[in-house]
Image (spheres, helix red, strand yellow):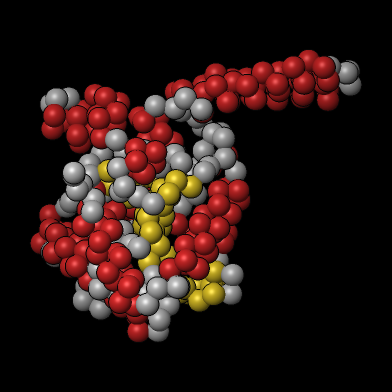
Length: 315
């Protein structure tokens, strides 16, 4: 498995253990004590590395190409998924997946940004950067959820909304602004989980939720670290410094009241054990939906409004 720079000592030791096991199997000799020592060393090394990740290292994990994406979570924790297509105005944006499904036999509307695993799929999915038609499709499906009184689950994973000329000509900023306004008025529970990258208005365009959770190694920020570094210091290579300043990781976001909870990941990131992190996400969705069901529609809207008005408040 391809690794990040700070993971190289771990990957090298994993390979050493794998080679030793192959040698043992081939030569039919007993070196189990040596293998055990190396495995103990590996476990301690993992704990040392992953327990002390910098914000920039967490950003790198959030972008890991093997990290589970929206469709992976839908397939792992939901059943009977039926995808809904198109914004009824221009086209179907494959960077934004929307549909209906069942979560523990409970009917829900689900949506989220979708990235690709290879170049061909990334071009199809536009690297998870939605166009205005993607946000209009999301709004159409959310209004459908309201009509049928279905809760909405949102998976956020985008570096940002697509900034191309065509997207701007078709009303990118208007589409996102409209979603911000209309999501405040949706009279059903909305729970959003940032599963990877939570970049700028591209994330917030489907992120106005009653509860917002962020995975342990995901990030949620008004701008990417590279973009921030380019603006503040005219140097995109200072992204690691920008990541520190932006306070974009779960613990800082929770402390500032921007999110409601941090969802734990397996040691080493979500891609190390997708099944485990999927169960954590499922538990988060079910628990929050159950809590939100106790509120009337009027209370739900009032609490949602107050939640976002309180962000950034001082005194």
